[in-house]
Image (cartoon, one colour):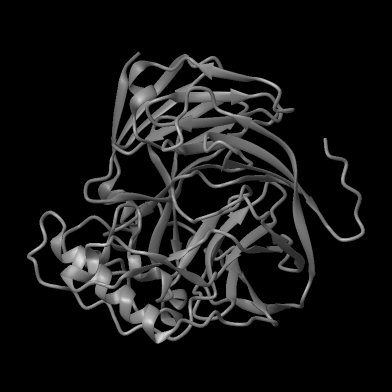
Length: 419
């Protein structure tokens, strides 16, 4: 089997080349839909399955739900695990050596099999038994993969999420901003989806590569609103600027729908938290490899957090919005004060609530996480998989081992089957 090599660097930057941008001109948002206050639901546990031989410090980096209800979880260094729909059994999928140890950023499963993407830009297609049927090497040049880096829409199209300019020295993303590239069966780029400039106008501070940390395009995002986006299974892009509680459904189309939450209370940020955050990360970024040693000025920060931090989407087209969460103070390394750093570290607990919107923008309600379940936007652990009112997500079991759990959303006055 031959490995194909596809160069996408110039093509992805369709804002300058025009390639692959046909029919994707930026548009103004349509009339807004205002969402009222909805019911609050809970997540009831259905089952929890521990992944064998996976340690407590190892995270699920890829999670995908197959059409028949089987769940697939990838753990770097361990490979791919298949869990039966009822959680009763787990099978280790025997992948080729590279794909067991590779830093896999995304995994999707559809009728055609398994698709894995690693951090070097290698994309592999496999049968459900783990046999490699095709590899594509995607050369992104200075570009890095974005959140939810690999998507397969309901029509079977394969999309790669990107951060243009993200990895370039001194590079700053510009708008209209390419965010997803559709890849054809031969590895060619077919189309590019771009976020319109009007979103950036509401978020005037652009992500700065000086403040990049791993997958995080700009670590100030906890305090400064930057544009947030994701792709729904039907191929629509959900995007918004969390300076307030508004976002667009089908944001890249000629007729996006703007949704506004009518009842929203900003999360306040104390002066001490803002000061400690700026000092801590300013020093840390200045002392990381390749830095010049000069403390960076991260501020000033607003006195409230951005309205939301992430979008998730379900197979039914619902949009799950992870709202801003208050920070809590945790003890810092005891040596920090000796270096002039704060004695506390401000962290987000991962506990909180999703606001759930119907595909037409109406608010369905709010879903509160159980006390022992956490969600943090990012590549690891992998994002939950959602099908209707059923949610699968990586969790930690009672002894600290890595597990995958299934939950059912229980709305008020709705019985829970537990199966």
